Image (cartoon, rainbow, N blue to C red):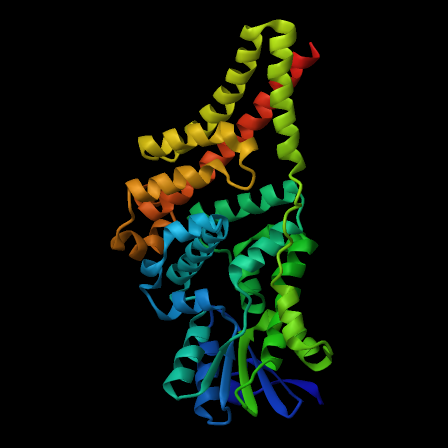
Length: 404
């Protein structure tokens, strides 16, 4: 294994390059800026040189499809997304797409165009192509599991604000993007202020992509890896120094910590509700017990229904939220938003034009209400938020009655 060498090479349009060799394979890491024409020129020059027999790019399968297949979103199975509890990562992807579209409109270049050029040109020339980045949904879930509930709220707020921000991206942010990472930039200032988020967003992906490069089984001897400049230093370090088996490392870095098998919060709520009803019947009579139960149903079901209503969901979607929310303690792991969203997607099935317009509509609040795909996401999110608020309000009220 040879030591990595970093250089700015004129043949790469002045973009930073790290070259190293390991296990008989020579790796050329080309650091790019995701909003730079020079990076596209560097990619084309590198592949045109004929030196490489394989190309790797900083993309996962989902982002690759989004860049190279304009109608990929039209093939999305929204029901599957809801059933597999992937609505939150899907919403994060919409935020990223909206941010990229703003950049494209402002700068006149599609963010990630150099990655698209690398992937497209590699296929056109019959070179082996490898997508080495970790699935963005897994990255998002690993980020969330490492944050406190308050930091999660701030992160979600940061992503949501980016969705509807119509101001131009600042020059400072553009310069940071040229040196950094698209996902990090889309999370805004919060990413730069949160070390835990940085670890999952940048460092883990450096390790993952370096390991994916070592996993190659196509017999390539000279690999061109096109990655954002912000990943260059970390990837070079892990590619040169990491001793663990690459497959074991990538498997570890895609693991998402499962929730505890014992849902203590849910069990506590069930005990609280049952205790309140029992206390009402034995000490306050049937009327008090019934009042406590109705209070739970009214707050949880009412606020979940209000959330679906604010999302302008179908009347039956609103009803589904109202029915599902009070039953939450008795069906752990199934949020009320799942039922209201499934009702919405069946009652107002998104059409092909909704998927095609998704990236544009995701940039405005009006677009979220106009686009049926976005509205399903809104119904899911606002129903769950309403239900969660109702749980705490009614739980506190019932506890207050029990104490007094």
